[in-house]
Length: 74
Image 1 (cartoon, helix red, strand yellow):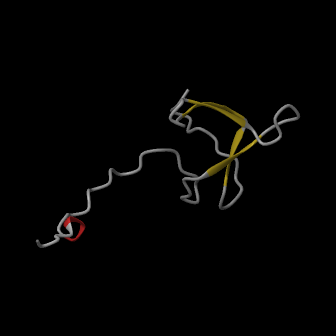
Image 2: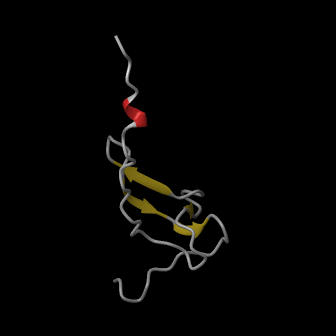
């Protein structure tokens, strides 16, 4: 019996373009700065681990800039 490695024959699935928030430096990863009640910020998640809400200020992991929503978003 021959063994066929299907991974070698599969094409990589195309990844959708990222359309989430980015810092002005281009970074897409943020940490949450909190306050005296939650110094590191806090999140709410589904059982699957998807973040559904947060408290704190998103700060860019690369340059440290606080993320501000664009004026077109309310």
